[in-house]
Amino acid sequence: MSDKKYKVKILPNNIETLAEENDTLKKVFTDNNISFEFPCGGLGLCKQCQVKIKRDSGEEERVFACQFKIKEDLLVEITKKEQQRRILSEGLEREVLLDPLVKKVHRKLPQPTLSDNRDDWSRLVERRGIRPSLKIAQELPKKIRENNFDVTIVISDDEIIAIEDKNTQDMLLGMAFDIGTTTVAGYLMDLKSGKELTKVSTLNPQTKYGADVISRINFAETDAGLERLHGEIVQAINELIAEAVKEAGFKTSDVYAISVCGNTAMHHLFLNIKPGSLASTPYVPVVTEHIVADAQDLGIKINPTGKVFILPNIAGFVGGDIVAGALTIEIDKAEKLKLFIDIGTNGEIVLGTKDNSLSCSTAAGPAFEGVEITCGMRGASGAIDHVHIDNELSYTVIDDGLPYGIAGSGLVDIIAELLKAGIIDQNGRILRPEEVNNPIGKKYLDRITTIEGVLSFLIEDKTATGRPVYITQKDIREFQLAKGAIAAGIEVLLKTYGAKADDIDEVFLAGAFGNYLDYKSACRVGLIPRELENKIKGIGNSAGAGAKLFLLSEKERNRARDIASKIKYVELSAREDFRDAFFNKINF
Image 1: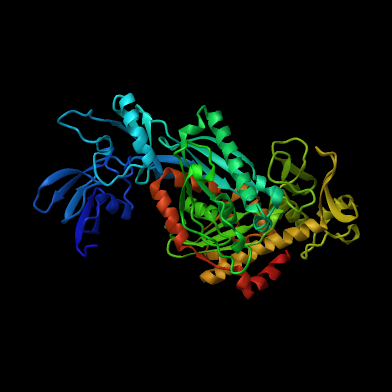
Image 2 (image 1 turned 90 degrees about the vertical axis):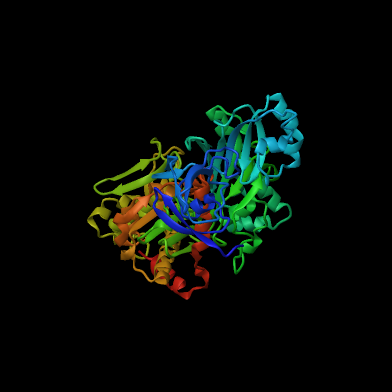
């Protein structure tokens, strides 16, 4: 590498920087976060990245930014309009430069003559340094001649992965996936417009082997366990791809790229990597780096030449789904302190700004998703999602109708309301009718009852199942453990960061639970510090949103990799202050 550096000034951005000798202008633009489209990914095939340069001598020239190498001081003028697309990211609207991880370029090739007898490959790419795969070399002569030298090439990174007939550059699809412990969500994306075409989801079929990640990690260590878990998630993703393209009127072969994020355990199981080291101290993942795989190698049924792009992880229990969430809220640009919380089977928390960010994971258990709660269920049709107690008890049900059970947000509400009504005390104990003194609580003494031998509070006896919906003393204890873990994780991150809750400018709640959650209830039960009640924002599936950004933009992919490398992980299990905070946060 040369030690020489040259001054480069870029207009109209008015950026001045130093560039290494032989750096391309594309690298300078990327290093300085200048939005500029390179449709062919910098292979020099599309001829659409022209800029004007001016040398010290006063000479002006138009050059291709992806190919031009810097050998002197330059003034660069970008006259090409920045091509941006606005996409809706599950509640957060963002403008991103549309620069997908797989691209298409239409090529109308000059036909060979006696005076132009270049080989077919040189005719296709017109520059040295791009080597053909054996498969591409084998199909190339027939493909270009059958199409009268009029073809479209499909590019991933610096590789041509396919050649299509005629001009198909306006048809390019990808899918973004969030593999959750409980649910898998997929988004079919038009990579030419940045638009979401359809959204699909299903329960993660691995749940039959355990509701939590530790159960699945342990099962993966048994004979054929890993293969079975890997096969289950691949089959689920293939079914979602087939469902999405059918709904949108396309074929699976039209999909050339998928992006995937999930917690570190889901990441390993999807990639058929043994996850055993995640379950025992010091909880080390096999890999945290961003991975690109051939779809065929993973059994993913998209175009046979398609690629799978997997988001990087941070640590053993903070995975690519949290990287995707941090990308969605743009923590790498935050001037003021942000708190990001993704509450599911595990509770992952990120606290930070563009200069310094910390993360942790707490074993919240599945209570927030309705598991291990007597009448609990996930936030689906028929779930009670909100409860209010005053002169009368009222509730709402997702999609209306009679209730089947209680979602996580409904569980938070009912506990908050029972606390307010004096039916639950500060230790989380359901009071017996004769112990209730609160005037509101006294209106509901007939609902404090024993059901199947357990002291409970009845919510509704007219249900879709014919069985009553209620909350038990055991349910409240499960909830206390879960909320205590989340609250203690927040406290330890604040302490480690050297900040107070008041210093936090915004709180982002991710996931379906965070989307339905009543913030006042969350603060009343101590899940989130009370002083943050008016700073909370639900952002839905931020992991899915981040996976879409990652798929749509090379710049966003680079940001995600940078975010993953810079967020420091705090291991709570090794800290005595976490144990102390946890016991303090269990009570209300």
